[in-house]
Length: 103
Image (cartoon, rainbow, N blue to C red; front, side, top):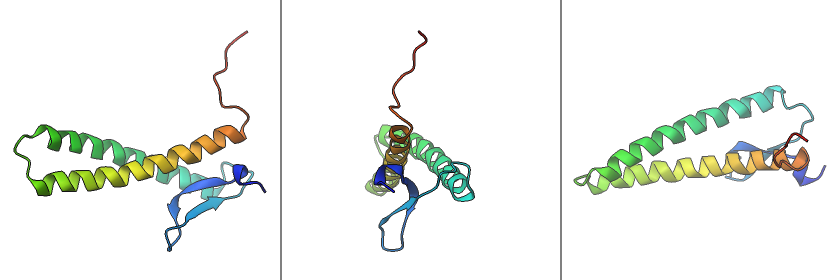
């Protein structure tokens, strides 16, 4: 099966390598588990973004607070990019992924 038909999962192997799912059923148990984890990661990223904005807006925030916010933001950005790559690959697989207009 070509790589473009594999779904990048929102977790890695114990060695930190990407994990992929090969299935023709987007509602399989593993697909739904991946969907749920992606939703949780997106929710977490929204909360991290809001918290980071608060820290950056605080002129007296200390180095520890800024480093914590940046660390969490970096982790969340990694999760969100993995989700974007995964979803982008599934759009390409479906044929185009462009806008559809009524004729």
